[in-house]
Image (cartoon, rainbow, N blue to C red; front, side):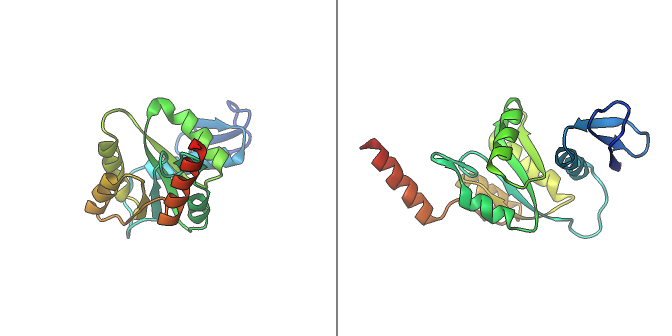
Length: 182
């Protein structure tokens, strides 16, 4: 079901996201960027028949991946922003943490298209179910997650994985933690 943006919807004092077929307002945003993000998320979530494998997509975790003990993982964020692929956040954070997660993502400047938080239960089960659903409409070219078990599960689905940090970064973090204790 396609949607479009409108600048002058009678029920919205900003940028409206509207269903094409019946004109229903599905979102109202202060900025065009926010409206476009909702539009992208709606299109991602909409099941449809696609020829081929879909758009190149990278799945990214938050805690331990984008967010490290000493702050945002700037080198990963820069690498991801440089990739010509859709970035989708698939996190074990609960739905109740969605707003805080979105604020964090906006603060770190990651160019992403959607956030999939955990409705409850196992983080790995949530991530696997989300990945399977997304695989119907996306060519998932990479999943970045700090948890080796989660990476192994992604790999079982045929998704290439990457650890969020290099060994040099891990060594620097350990040294920083040791120095902070002294």
